[in-house]
Length: 332
Image (cartoon, rainbow, N blue to C red):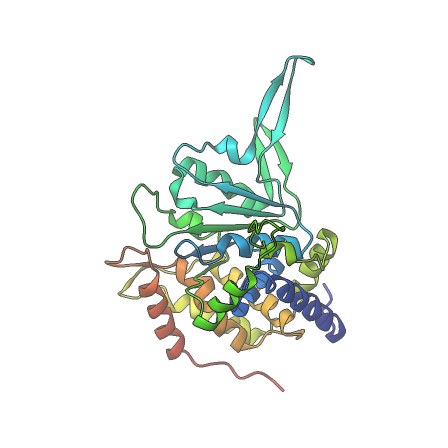
């Protein structure tokens, strides 16, 4: 596979920044997190957003899907949700006397799995095959999901009554776990200012929908092409050794019960390639790896004497280990 050229890297950067700019028309003051979602999309990954309700998680996923010209579907995960409600069901057609497959919402480019931890483990696992292999098998028949395909799942890190925590095997399927947090006061004021009076002469108030301002700057085909280009970003041996060193450092620590798996190392490399492309480079720097290590690896760690809900202990341990490792020198 040929290494990406500098002109191609600039093409990826320009396309990625165009997507970021469009999503920013719906989300105020979260550029860093928007870029992380774009990095995940380019790396063919999925994202788990942990945050309280009302900070823009759904709007962020909708805006991303709209900006890349993809189909968006949303599933509200509840305890009574069944796997077939996600993957689809074969329904008997009395006119033809045949079973006809009715595709579920998983057949979309961007799937928002809202409050994923409120569904039972069996329903949660309905996403695993699609997240890992980009396909869904029902009644013995395997069907491919549309490409690009990305799951954006959300969960509330505070309210855990009546929930089913995601098992480690499923957490490992997410490329990243991110936290949006509250906006700054000036950013929140901008959000209020966007709510304009669009009513008629009777002063009927209809708040604007920020997502409607987002325009498609890519198509599904061009997004797939960008993903293929990102896979050609060069990763030198010193950078690969740095990724392995970070993963290896998490194994055998007294405060870490379960370290990063080889899947985590591969995920960190893919994410670093995408981050380099977003920056307009055709090669990965150690700084790309260092900046992405916590969002890509922290949720894959299992800590001793820690509930694992907030991820703060895992993030702190990972930050300490990264600080102890030497940053490789890049050849000139």
